[in-house]
Length: 315
Image 1 (tube, helix red, strand yellow):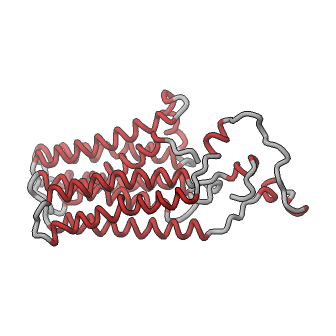
Image 2 (cartoon, helix red, strand yellow):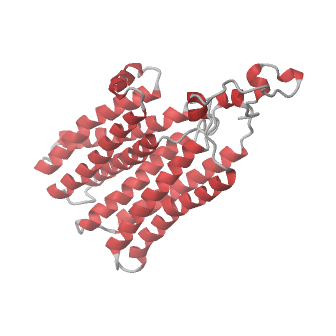
Image 3 (cartoon, helix red, strand yellow):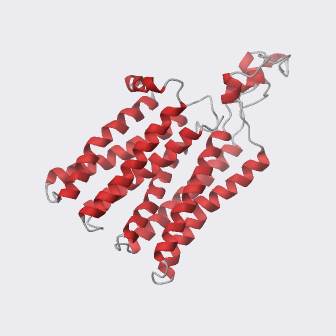
């Protein structure tokens, strides 16, 4: 599949935003961080900026962005529509929760209720994003059980890195914020490795013979291309990345997205807090580069079954 940079930016930025939003809310509800008004203001501002910027960037992939509102109407059958509805619905409880944090209304039961509802809505939104791809039977590399949980885990891991960096800036970082980031990064990395292993080992059951119904007569090959010039399907569905390049990019995404951030998060714990700000910043920057690369590969390595009609023998 052709990697659309607007969608890559959307899934990574909004995922990190929802992760930060959820973990900051959870930390506040559990009294793991001081309910300082300016800590809450900066944290929620960054989270909402990432979420809103990501959602807006996704519309640039549309042929007619002004019609994006129509996606909300098919929530009964479409995961894309459910994602849109969940994303908009999340603003209400989380926005009121953030306002209550800033104004000091943190003892009221309504504030606590809004916090838990906002966390749930954030998780549901990211899960719906993953299910947009995991529900597509026409793309073998996406129609896998690891895809939706992986979106949630990566969102949580990147959100944990941002939360830790926020706490470092405000001088409120503690061991739990570092360990939370380390554990979530490790879990996301293991899930991503399991996904790649399963995707590589899965047999390619879709063939040109099966697609045309002529497989019983022997090998089926296209006599000539369906089109004499490139078209939309060939541009969007026929993108291919070399196996050698894919392996290199996989390694880089693991190192940058997970390994370096894990080591960077562990260093302050091993050195009694020496260079905490530097290590936390390095972890966040490295993870951003690695996750962008991971998400690019997620699209570039996917193969749609429609390519069987354009010369591919299996998918």
